[in-house]
Length: 318
Ligand code: C5P
Image (cartoon, rainbow, N blue to C red):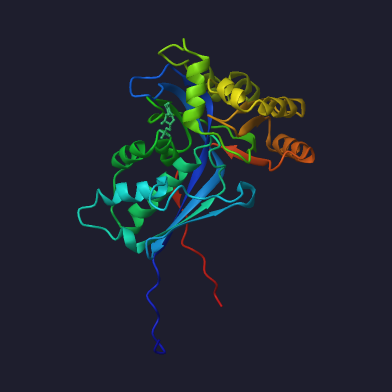
């Protein structure tokens, strides 16, 4: 390169999206389309996946935190990140250079863990490419695209705390002024969400059409009192997840003995969550569980923001 010329900076944008927990997960009997009607309260917690989109050659690469083991995408083209990219590209007036974008996904959210990690990746991809391609897609349109990608993807965009109905995709923000402290214990091996719903159908053939109401959790949230939220937490998929992974029951009991206000399965599992009374309480519980050799134990607080752009990439000033 000739002296004095500065190369064009490579355009790059990084978007961060959070994991979710369900404070209430009421599940009704399966609808004719196979999905289950939900009455749920989501909370976004401070455990994140990042997606970096930059000018490139059409690659999708996954990098993952060591505690997740080796994460392999299902297929170069048949994964939720590529689906999100194609869906957004199809909304553009002109053909976009999908083949000229590199996507790097940095995973920290447990995979197939009941914390919407794949949904976070999809939401982050939508926002990153919308910015990279300067599409300016408005929020309602982005939410519609998100719902086509998966039931939890709209919430990954919105974040905070929200009441979800439909199959979890119809959202209403919920005021949530407190900071809640969670201990998160992932499992090395994930659980398939459809398999957990199927087990739910087998175990509860008489489940009502209308899912259990989240009113109790909504009142507890408004109180800001951790003990009240602990008493109200509810997950209709927990019995099915525990049936598939009975050893999680022992973990939940241990955490409660060690000081958690309440332990429960996260969404369809197998990640286990513990609500604690404070940041110190969460750190003490994490230490106690780690001392028992239960693998990785994380601390996260919520609510936090949904998918959002991080500042520009930092480069070496040398
Ligand atoms: O929407 P998503 O692709 O995340 O759903 C994955 C699977 O989980 C669905 O195919 C369905 O088996 C199950 N599911 C369900 N009811 C919901 C959400 C998901 O039965 N409300």
